[in-house]
Image (cartoon, rainbow, N blue to C red; front, side, top):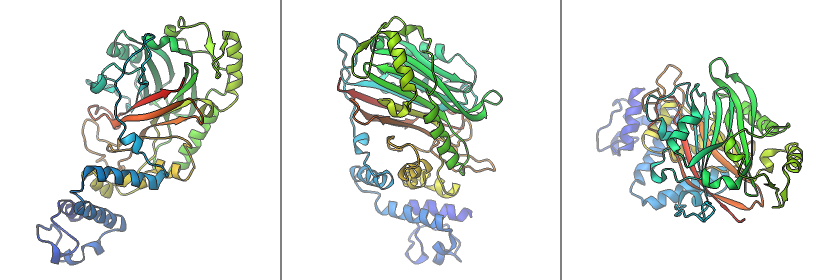
Length: 427
């Protein structure tokens, strides 16, 4: 039904409507069906045409009103407004004598399913944020389906001498790295790593499923970073939910040795407990072992979750593609499986995400900006996500200052996703 897609494009331009009598411009529909266009469409495609007609009638509304409408749409899905994330403005960063950012801790998070390929160029774009180059306090890099290459040395060369690797966790093709400004090392202690496998073929074809985790202390606060790769395919929603539940129950649930990163060894010989009381290292290890018996996700002050979570957009590729082509991605929110599961209380309880104002990040034809043209015709989806969770009554707050995809990297069928989080503490 090529004419239907052409009709939708014409509707979006305001040149066609549902019947011939009111169409004052070019109409690509065959004459025999023009008077009854809507009757010939499937229900989902009627919905798309209706949305496009509504969009045309409201096209000249002020941008501020459109942003407010977007927040209203999101409220219908997860019950809370994201305006504080959408309109939050960047704050200037200044440093005190100890090297800590007085405007809050700036954490740059990026996740990318590399599809087993190293890009020939532009890999530095994964962390080279032009708006604030090398001004972030922490860089957290989560990779899925990563090939074998010298990740640490590559990114250290890009970030420069003012950064060092403070923790990492690798399980075959599933990898996680945390870099920090050297001026902050005196505030970072007790780095730990863990791995949870839930299947896949990491050692064979580089598609390990599960999670890699890094936990460390920033002052009196415990941070937990998780990079996940969950089950694929649209129909595996319950499998993805079950895998994440297993990850949250298993991560750091067994005795674990500290991460061997040397740049934190000389930072301090004493760690700080949850109440700000200094303890000897051996005593802290005993307390840490006891804490591991509990759910580490619930016990951490801040959890940052990233990865190829593989939740899909439900719909037909044609109708979804029409909305994307007309910059109406926000209308796909109700079809996003992750948002649906959160709204139903099935998964990710307490986690927050910035607004998905960027295009779906999967599945692209490699090397192009075209969505899947193979015979499988996978529906464009936001499979790659970054979420965070702040523990109730914790001494910190988090604001999303940027949440976007990185479209300059096209060597994979996924686009990377980045987030800039401003963490403010009351310590």
